[in-house]
Length: 330
Ligand SMILES: C[S@@+](CC[C@H](N)C(=O)[O-])C[C@H]1O[C@@H](n2cnc3c(N)ncnc32)[C@H](O)[C@@H]1O
Image (tube, rainbow, N blue to C red; front, side, top):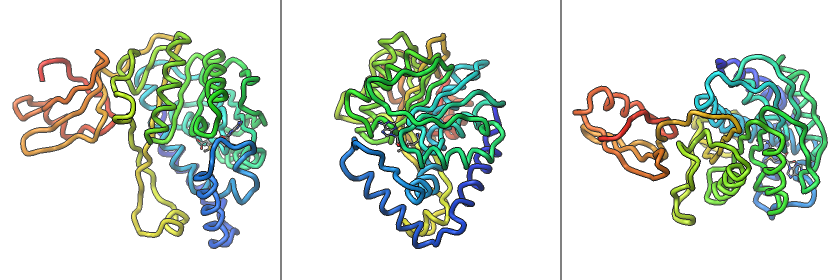
């Protein structure tokens, strides 16, 4: 696996360069327009990312967060598929290419990469940013509309990140089916909201029906144990804030946490986590409470106390989203 730090630093440097020459008020204005558009009615009939100012705003403001979310999902996937690395990657609705950077941060080396999107300005900017990473320099940036006509060339890995929410019901089904038809592995990432989670579950069901095995986050390929409407499975990725973030959002926090939902699934056999920590662990005096999704397809709270020795030490260090290696008896 790759050491992600250089890739994320290269991305950060490339993104901060984008804002050079753009008056700060203009950059902040473009971000505000973008946020307003994304609050509007989606799906849209035409791209939200219409011009250079829109895509610069998207790349500077959202791409670091979508990159970190996809990277976390891919890391969990790589843990469940040790020894596997994608020989080719197609990023559908790839925009400025956050997922291509996340793939480069997860697996060493270059591979054929294709980014598909209907917004030409996003593709153009993505191509420009990708110049900064040798693994992405030869990527193909192609205009394509997601719809029932979409057919993808065969690829080891297909990513669909932060896209499903912009699609009609029929197009959402079509893109997941096209990904399943084309790929050995599919990773879908959405915002960590109840709606984002619902779209991930719909994609998960579709992938399982197409013969895929869930690699992450679930330790099983059975039905999700969450009763619809009562809760939603999501995780959190830490994102350093840029000066643009601080300008738009105010405050001086050096980071923010991007909440995301995801599913990573493969046609080949995978080794999912023994169980997965699905909430922030609660550390109490002498004990840690872990909310786990278990291989049996059930949710269970386990209490790890000092009498569990090493397990207790590990539980104190465990983070939301980590695999939990413990078997029964806790
Ligand atoms: C929120 S952005 C996500 C971009 C990128 N995947 C990421 O994670 O940062 C959604 C992307 O989906 C693209 N998109 C939305 N609907 C589409 C459609 N029907 N056909 C092709 N691309 C579409 C948009 O142009 C945009 O680039």
